[in-house]
Length: 487
Ligand code: NAD
Image (cartoon, rainbow, N blue to C red; front, side, top):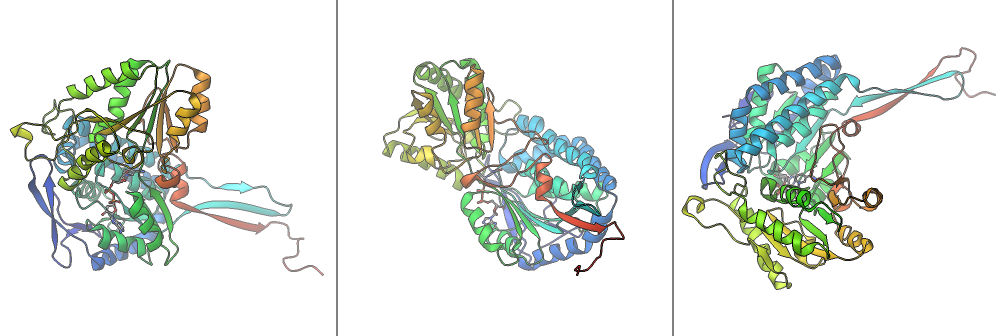
């Protein structure tokens, strides 16, 4: 297990010698002390990335791609160890880290490995006598700051496109979950990434993260995290006017019409909110149900929620693990009181599960509460296994509730009516819409939000716009055209 900063191709302690404990959320024990980067360490990482940039950006794109493909293979070869490390550090059940997080991480590096030599420019038809072409250039050193909810996967989402485009990276993982991105750094060194191309610097958000956002030599900062910190990132980035990409919070609407297939709704909605203990920006945290099917759906949904097997993340039969930190567990549980204060009813869960085996961990039962659409619990991001239920009558009412928060990241709808499905998909104020499914992601499909959910897109070709800048080149190809002001 690597626990030091990864700078210029080597694992090194922080200059201050300071460390931070990484905690196992299952039993509140320490997994490791991890070096904690300060501003001087960020400077070292930026210097290494700057020095690596000319060679990396001028390398044949196919060779950059080949390294990303080798990394994807190495991730698959080390899948069991990576899944175990991620489960230990985050509390995600091993069946999810092994079957979803690790394969998706490898798939993302592989997708962008293939993309590296397909980032094309264009020729623009301009007036006769001139050739105008546009190339896409990398930005230089990019800073990346990620949260703790999918640390392994987000390492690939952030690094892979940046590297494919020819940038060098300084990444800060979340202080709670630094281990899997350090493991990826180790694999990168093993498969031959040149020193300095990638640097991983665990540290505190308001120190290391803030300095990455401020740093005058960093050309872009890509941030995934809360809306509140996203605002700070924008302010901190103003010094050198760096490019900013923000993947922020969400309050996913999950709209169920009267003609929906309720079997599919129950399964899809449970995956939408309870997978990863609800710690997902795109979690289906608001169930918005047509009043004619609400009773039947709720009976089935609460019964499934009560049957979810909560337990040690390393047990392959566990379906839901602990939340990633004690502080976060307490915050999620505090929302149960908030719901009650505003007249909501707890329909299922609402507390930490009983049992000595889970007593030291940060567990919360799958929680379902009734709420008015304007209640705090239906407006604020809880980020846990906590779903509000509201009902609607007309389609217009359902749409108004779905669009009635400041967020606009992911939304789902369940209906057999094709016309209504497409109409709603168009009218939902949301970066992503799932019809008769929920929370599907793919390396090729644009991912991101609107409003308080941020701006910019990850994945697909869209993200290459985030990690490149266009250059327009004009060439006078007609000797008869005077190059000066004609008189
Ligand atoms: P957070 O905003 O507290 O922290 C995210 C990262 O920012 C961490 O690495 C943290 O150290 C760093 N940070 C904290 N303060 C900083 C500062 N002042 N300057 C720079 N960096 C700073 O978020 P979190 O609690 O770690 O993660 C949960 C949030 O992330 C939720 O709101 C969730 O919706 C959001 N999220 C969004 C997406 C998306 O793609 N839209 C995906 C996952 C999570």
